[in-house]
Image (cartoon, rainbow, N blue to C red; front, side):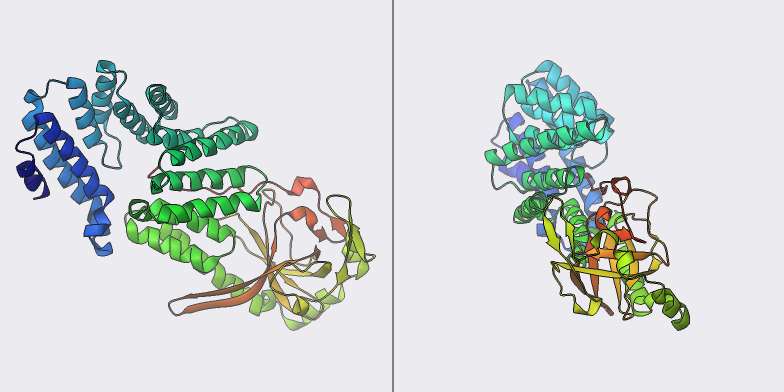
Length: 442
């Protein structure tokens, strides 16, 4: 119906103008789908876009003989076929022909790059976007190069270099159009990759979340399930569990055919339920066994490097430390305090980040502890004595339907600050956390 109305409006246009409008209408239908359809119709989006594509292709075929610029026609037909999330061999053929006929056609290079991306040919996609930039500086090539660069690199050093370049390309795209939510979304992904690929500076994570929030202001980007999924991954890492669950749920609602968001949502609920259960039951250890375990604590000896009331900080400074109990900790950074206790359980999960265990002090208070950046294969075991300096406490308060979770937990960003059985852990127990984000729609 929309195509019929558009054709009526375009009766006085040239055949090329009519075809251009048809392809534009197709992309508007896809990108603004949720402005005209409810979330209940989300599962039908690809099918309805495919139907719209068929009508658009009919218009293209009707006017093919009247369009003299064959490069433009090939580009428009290839672009139309590229509207679906799946790879199209015909689109690749048409767009390749378009750039051969007119090597300066930037839109053809960008669409060809996106087709190669869908095919999984990252090197060819990079060449296309770089080629487009040689003819014209434009936001689509810049942000797509940002996306492509993050897939390159043979080792950690090289990947970090490409990720830093990725951030700069995303920034350049935003400078050309500060209101484009897709560019902001891609910059958020670039910052998230930089955060996990480098020193995990809080400033970088803050820049990532700021970019995602800017992206959400754009109605097109706000309906992108990837945006909500990737931001939820970041929220989960930050232990903002309520916001993470909302994000996973929103991503699933926007694309019901994509199973991963709901899988992450449900696994996070299971994780919270398990932690809450084991915390309340103190690792499910019987009273006598727990009592015997706590009696084996060796006081200052188990404090290791933290005994004596102070320790040397990372910059060589002297940091005062006072031993305290879990009940005295506040939901924040507890400066100049150290706690000691026994491991009563640990959790295995499909997601290796973080490594989680329950920790009971001499007063039999139990807190869960989440340790990040732990080397694969390492973890404390039941019965280990653990000392944690300047513990950072977070209050978990989550409600989803009939389920409610409320408890305090301790966050440890690096295992090397821990003293286990009187010995401080070495750098061999540390490795950067690797979290995967989604690049489905980039």
